[in-house]
Image 1 (cartoon, rainbow, N blue to C red):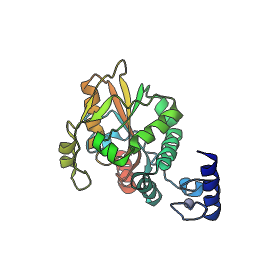
Image 2 (cartoon, protein in one colour):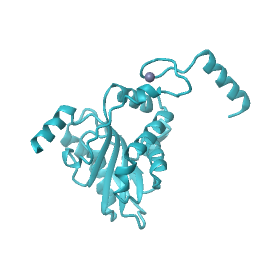
Image 3 (cartoon, helix red, strand yellow):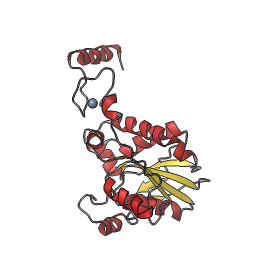
Image 4 (cartoon, rainbow, N blue to C red):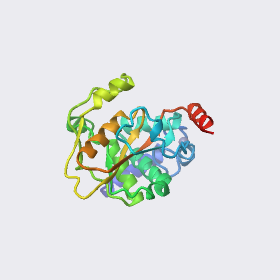
Length: 236
Ligand SMILES: [Zn+2]
């Protein structure tokens, strides 16, 4: 940043102090979201919940950082639709800190962000999963590889599809190449719903020789907290 730009942005901050996207209070030194709101994100503490995911055929492990509550939704919206790289980086770092111990037991060779189709990447300018992955990989000190897994075609938006249709939509949407000596991978994405995207990614990696593919997402709207309690009660 040039000195003029730096001075200008300082002046703008002074005249219009940055407002937290969640509580809309003025922030003192924080960016995008205030510390108070950030600390209000609710960790799922679900541990590895791969068995509870609808489409987990090719996944060996799954962890979602937080529940999809109001603060989380605002952050995802900001990250995806307001194209905030900063939110993705904050999320990725926080996720890395949250999961550092948990992930150290998995002996992961490489972190792999769920890729966007190249046309979509050009259109949007960045892949939020890649930003999450880079930030997470920095915290857990495992390389982030963006030249192993690719998206073949532009799949239709998943939002209106049911679980089976999602699986169909995603099957063979990805391919992997040049996995080298790596055998254990950790996929990263923003949200986990049915798992169809992550499972399709895992399938592509395994067809190239991967032995273990886990997935980490920032959040999950499913299962709801009450169904999780039901699962735990049923097991108890
Ligand atoms: Zn706030």
